[in-house]
Image 1: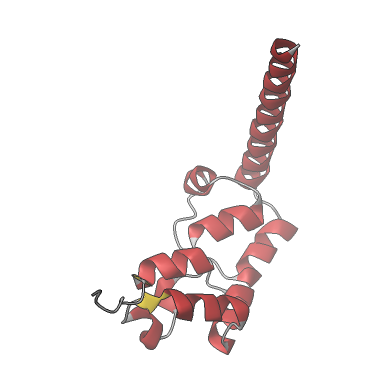
Image 2: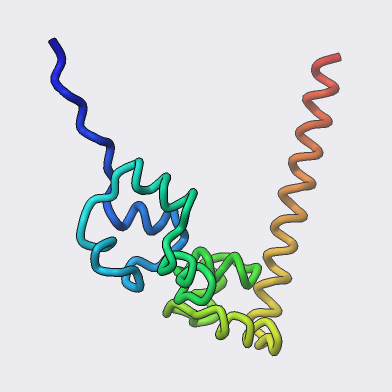
Length: 131
C-alpha cells in the first residue's frame, strides 16, 4: 500500500527565475508560498495579468536585462548596472548606448563568433575521424 503522493513544489525564488521575473516585484501571494508544478504550468499556459505586466514592463532581473541589451551579466556589472531595470530604461540605453554598452556588445559578439568557430572546427574534426 502506497501513501498518496504530495504535489511537486518549488520555492518562489525558483519559480520567479524560471518565469524570468523579479521576485520582489511579484505579488505577495506568489512570494509567500511554494509553487506547485501544476500552478507553474498553468502560469505558463495562461499567464495572470500581473505576470504579463511584469514581463512586459519590468522591472527585469539581471539575466533578462543582459539578454535584452545583448551583453553578459558580467558586462552589466562592468557597466555598473546593479539594479533591476524597466523596459523603458532598457530601451533608453539601446537608443542612446553609452560607451560601456557599445564595448560590451562588441565583446559579446566576439565571444559568440569564437564559440561558433570552435564548434565548426570540432564538427569538422569529428567528421574526419568518422571517415
